Image: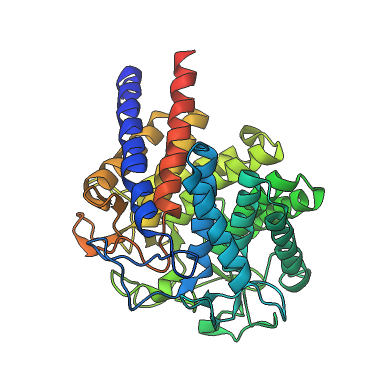
Length: 430
């Protein structure tokens, strides 16, 4: 791709992304997302944008992601008071109803009114609590939010840190004892949850500048790169024993993979890699390096190149565009339907690598994903992303939102992609 053509194409995509964000994603959630009766957020909508009234429980994952998103929008558009109020009421509902006053930490799920439904302690959920609380503090200066973010971090160190083998236990009971093995996953660790710990520790350190948060961030990065990534092949692995032996990935309680009702699946569990997690790891790792003050070219760029190249070779659909879901470590994809979150992460990841390296193949990969997203995943009539499509772009699960999907992926990919396109265009103009 010639440089001028690439620059022109990036400008067009930037305009389209901004339009999707300003005239689609934000209005969709402005008009539907706030629970004006009980507080917090309503996050389940069908393909027509209508509330799914039989599924109104509130999960820690989506409630915190909505707080995070409105906090980000408040920082981007401070003149509109809606975003601050939307984030504040969500934060008030969250602290009032999700905090476990007996054992500490956050419940997994409450009902619409705020009564506890599932008091399990899942580190995935705790990590998003830290992420939202720290971002809310960055947006507002609210010290209560920061206090709870730090308190959650401290509880993870006390109850979940595996001080013998490294990393963190991930699935625990209300009193912080390990869950049963197997489906309850007390015997497993995963790249997914450790990556989100890296994500939330990055934001927490940005908020506090405390050395202990920086040290734990460096530690979790080291765990991921030492134990959870095959550096020779250039991909992450999905699941591990507690001492980091790679094992076949299974559906686990309180995960999207277990809750997903439709789409392709791998019949017999095997050791697999997630193309979405690999490319998400790339841009989150580079972001963590920049927040810490480490130069990614020196420390982590080589593994980022390998992860991205692997995602292009096996995860990118060269024929139809978009990203496949899962496959073996070294071979063609096994699950070829197209889901919202892998494609949103691919947009940011490929753009990040193009910005960092200038290599046109990463821009080409970004555009192939973008074309599929814009044509098939983004519902232009409603202004949000569909959940799951087949390889060619026909909806399998056309819902616009479910208990796991707010605007964390769609909104964040638009915001982060626009940031990177602006930086790339500025560099090219110098």
